[in-house]
Image (cartoon, rainbow, N blue to C red; front, side, top):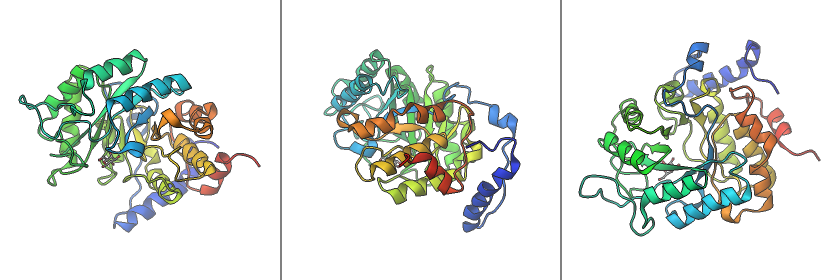
Length: 336
Ligand code: GAL
């Protein structure tokens, strides 16, 4: 399969798809991203290729997302060879913090689940050659309502994350009192840029305000969809919604159709092969969402497939088109 660059006729199906989707909400216009824009990167210099790592949410949600799991996950990424295959980020999701800020107004790690705090966890993860990611929300409370959001505390929280040695921030979109994403996400972006540590910035805005159109100025990746579920229908729906924005992905800023479900048990092995392959050719972040401490050989073989990872990380830094599903499946499914 080839990319569309220099072959304008191959772009037509995707543009039509974009138009069809936009028409559903009463807007149909073809957007072109120029080469100069495509080449510019956020000044934090991160995300030259789509990020690879692991996140706690798809498997653990709020339960069991504690420091023991995170440390063991870091250990497992290294001992299985997944870290060597490129999976470097170990990312906490919602529910890592105390429900209230501390006396100084700082976010504080949940005393029960993260008794040693986030700095000690970051030190441990770094000692393994990995990077630590954290989660917050561009609102007053996070989506699980378990902890405060960062709205109005952007500078303070960005400094806290930097002081702990955090390398990645997933920034969610709940409980914001209808304030504007185009204010909230830039505010955190600026705060991160001034926090004194390069922090990969993932805008988890769910695609509501089409962040593919503006996200590259503020972040390194942006969700193009709502939450993935561990089913074939959900996974292919994420792929289709993400595809519309293919033209906007480039080094420094990537479309994010949500994290991987490979290994969580809701799809067949062949379906997981397709899932991983589609994410790879879409230049999507490869963020594992299963329990890598207890994964099957089949799961490992999918996630560690060097050729598929090379498609995601190497070569042309643009997504390949998925507009016609059949060839993508033929490419993804094993022979026989
Ligand atoms: C959702 C987000 C999920 C997860 C969850 C945590 O908004 O899309 O990926 O982070 O919140 O509450």
